[in-house]
Image (cartoon, rainbow, N blue to C red; front, side, top):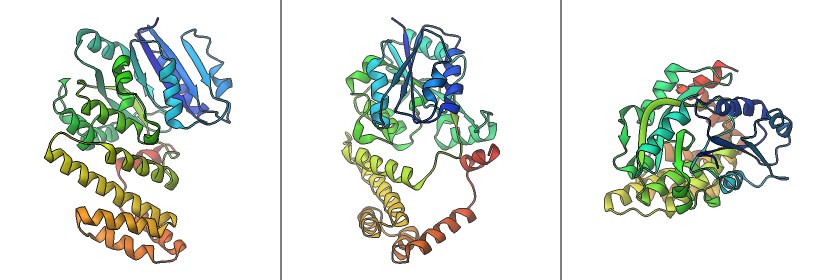
Length: 329
């Protein structure tokens, strides 16, 4: 039985999957199994996977698309290792990821999972040093010290400092919290980490760049944003925290998420539902220029409101993620 189970859920990304799989096969630590879960990809994923003859690779192909979270769950259910990691089919691990994280779990029996920092890479797989620094600062990874993470609820819920794809877990711990909830599809990584914190599990941070997270042009769309924001609304609404300060934070974050979802629904054309969510958010957050603009836009013809929103996006300063996506177009 392998010590580590590595799971790569995939859908229609055969061209990136090669990079991800090879990053696992190139690990300096070798006691692992690699489970590739294919969610009914219409491309040549099956052919690509067949090129590897390594007996540590297991390929699970679903005959039809069963959804992101269920596909992830299928890999987890098939896993046999004591430790478990899942990362996306366009990302990668640096060669020492498993060696460094396994060593922590082996030496720290009370630690349930170990998370690392990660590189930002572009579509060509090139490391982006400036974007990596900005990403670490944005999510607060640059202020975390090596060792057991204090106040895990704040780090996972308020700051969102940790990432599932750069984290090695004890599989038994994930079984205790039921791993991925189908209702959280699209926001399952955030949900899993918060639920681990609520369950009082112990996390450990390793401040090394041991994983590679890829930015590319295929990652953003209105449909994906709506899916993510709907799932995040469900997740935040389902949590309950042990003190008043955290509960107040949860209510505010729920209102902010509803506000973002409302604005995106207005952009899609569902003005009534969008306005309803904006009204709910103002009861907690009060009014703002953003909300006022959203209400005004909701009464304009759909093509005009979409034109104005796209114009705004083109004129505002680009953040580091957008710049990375442009470097390897």
